[in-house]
Length: 261
Image (cartoon, rainbow, N blue to C red; front, side, top):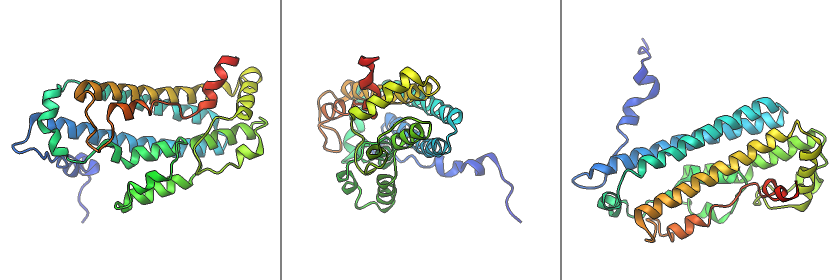
């Protein structure tokens, strides 16, 4: 006879609540907080990717109202992700350094789900696949995401299906390449803003999404600077300098047209 479903079994709480294993010995008090925050990040990353896939299906089926609602959900998740930094910032530099050495080479740079998010938004670089060559699950997920069209591709496809004159070379671009600024695409977007008001809210939600990720990156940079200053990152990166260089838009054309409106 099958076991009765309970709150605990439905949520797999035994596995979740026993997944925190501090490396410091004896365990430093703040290491548990550090672990839980980053585990929660990964759960939110999983949900964001789930919503990105849903968003692309909605755009392909021309369901604009639900696509905009999905974007609203993603934006709300991003606000929660940003707020988690407030919790991390309750930890002083001395408290973090009490267990930092036990992290060895472990780093957020190794989050394959965050790399998937970047790929999904058009920031694709094949060399990143090499960083996960020894992790079969990560490699498979990233390879699939690398070969798939991006959120931007779904968006421009929706514009074309809505009667916008998106150039064929943009619609058929190599989706394994990074999304890059295009004067031709900017001309299309300017026409949307001036003559197709029904499409403007969708464009603005994508700007919100882009801004939300930049806000998260900025808060992350300042949190790292506040905690470790200019020390090198645990994964060997340049730390704050590297993170600061990542605060760039995913959808450059939606930003470039602002000066022309």
